[in-house]
Length: 119
Image (cartoon, rainbow, N blue to C red; front, side, top):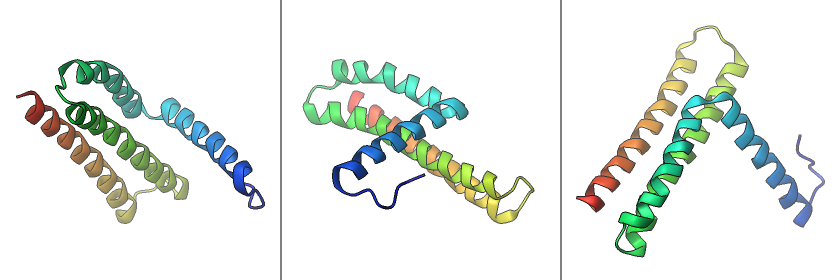
């Protein structure tokens, strides 16, 4: 739990620990995130090799970072929805579906970015 009295550098250090905990939790509980990290590990060297300019390399790598960012947010939404309850509720389903749509959209953006730059 965050310390509301932490200020300055101490607050930043605490935030780093919370972020690491978030990465660990997502890695442990979300297979999609693990797959996207593996995809990032594979595509980053490819981006550095295939991108002709610094901007192309950044776009190729950045598109994959975007996928992981959206997956982290989607996983957070799903965790909150599941925390509220596992029974079926229209709004819970809608929240999860919207998060999933965001991930799909980021994957499509990554695919389009890679296609346009490489082709």
